[in-house]
Image 1 (cartoon, rainbow, N blue to C red):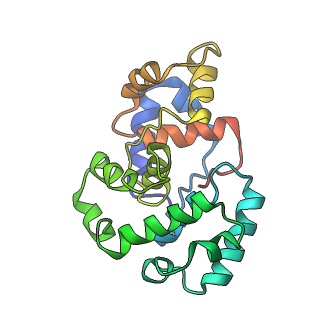
Image 2 (image 1 turned 30 degrees about the horizontal axis):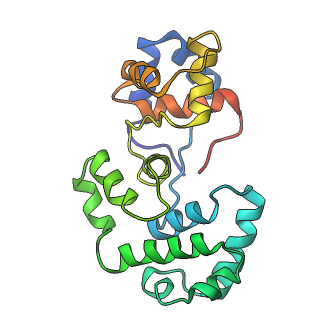
Length: 206
C-alpha cells in the first residue's frame, strides 16, 4: 500500500513551516497510511473493538464473521440479536451492528456519495449510527477515506504527542489542541500521523 498522492507535498509544506514536523518527518521516512478496504466492515470492526483489547476484538470479530458468513449490510441486518450476542458481542454492540447495517442497507449511508461531501458532512452521516461517535468517524476519515486534513482533538495519543513536542508535557484541552492544529492545516491528517509515530514507532493502523 503506497502513501496517498498528497503525502509528499504535505510533508514538504509541514517541514518547511514547522521544525518539529521537519524532525519527525525525517525520522520516519517509511510513511504508509493504509486503506482499510470495505467501509461497512471497517466500521463494524470499530464497533466490535470498542473498550476491549485488540486481541479480544479480533477473537470476537472472527466468531462473528464465521457465524455471519456474509458480512454485508443486507445480511447482518437480518441476524437475531441473541445470535449476535452468542458470538461474544454485548447486547448493546449487537444492536449497534444491526443499526449500522440498517444505515447502509437503506441508503442513509452511501459511500459513493462521500467523494462529493466534505469531512464534516461525512462525519455527520456516520455519527447518526448508534455506537459511532465523532472519534470513530474521524479515525474512519483518516484510515479509510484517507482525507488529508483531519485533526482528532479527542484522541489521547494526539494530545500526548502535542504536549510532548510543543507544550512542555502540559496536556492541551480540546480548544487548545484545535487552535494548535491550525498551524498544520491543510495537512492535519499527515501531522497527526507523524505525531502518533513519535509516541509509537510501529506504523499506526486503525
